[in-house]
Length: 92
Image (cartoon, rainbow, N blue to C red; front, side):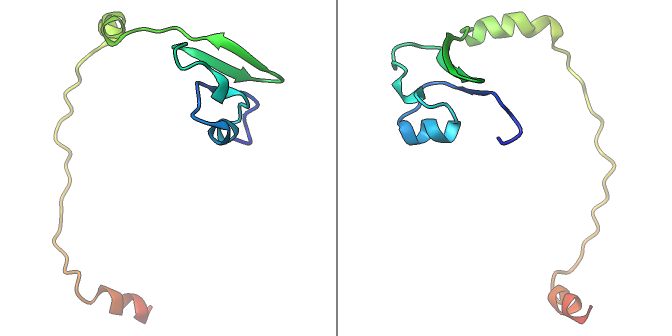
């Protein structure tokens, strides 16, 4: 949070949550105003975010979707007794 100058927040439940988000006044956004957000760079400004429903998102992204079949990883699991491990650590 300290490394970023920009804060963006949607509606917050109360002033405490808005303060945590770093955007004072985010609690004042009307609940009925879907997509309404506040951005703070040097000052707080209100803007309207775009809304895409899930179906539209899937349609837009479908040309870029590819299925990749990963082969089974070559992992060998060796059984190890857990009894006595603490004693071995204490001896180090």
